[in-house]
Structure formats: C-alpha cells, structure tokens
Length: 142
Image (cartoon, rainbow, N blue to C red; front, side, top):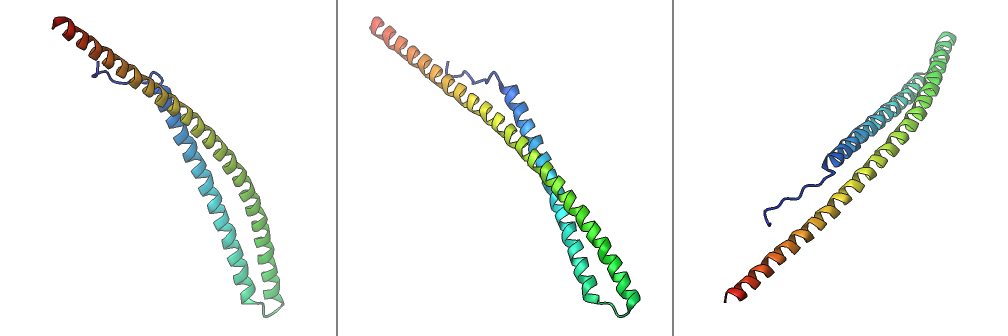
C-alpha cells in the first residue's frame, strides 16, 4: 500500500483558483502601472511649468504667450489629476479583487494540505495493519 499516491479530488478547482489569482494580480499590476505613468506625466507637467516660469517674459507679447501656456498647463494638470484619481480607484478595486482571489486560492490550498495529511494518516494506518498482520502470521506459523 506504500506505493499509493495522493490525488486531491479538487485539484482542477485549485488550479483554476491559481489561474484566477494570477489573472487578478496581473490586472492589479497593470492598473498600478497606469497610475504610475499618469503620475509621471503629472510630474512632467510640473517640470514644464517650472521651465516656462524660469524663462521669464521680456515684453508684453511674451508675457501673454507665457500666460496662455501656463493656463494650458493648468488645464492639463486638472485633467491629469482627475485621471490619477480615477486610476487610483480602479487600482484599489483591482487590488481588492486580487486579495479576494488570493484568499480563495489559499482556502483551496489549505483543503489540499488537510486532505494530504488525512491521506498520510490513512496510509500509515494501512501500513501498521499490514505489519500487525505479518507479525500475527509469523507467530501463528512459528
């Protein structure tokens, strides 16, 4: 009986939960990367604003052009901040889904571990019964 191998009856479910967890994690990482990219673009808007302000304006025309550029940057900044807010919400939602999927996978792994432990106990009992039977037969034969 020692050659018996453990087969988890819910192995396919466990494998599917592992795939779901991986998909959810990948989705979360994509959302996080999108937010990082948006934050990087916001930082670039800030660098551009500082560069414009550092150039200064010599005459009235240059001053007006600078004002227009700065207003456009303000509009871009507001839009970028709104985008970041939206991306952060999506990232939070994706993270919650990933954590749920990870928990579901963990439950299945614990079930597998418990079933494997029960299997080992059963095998040990069967081996002990076989040894007891062998010992009994030797005594009877002697």
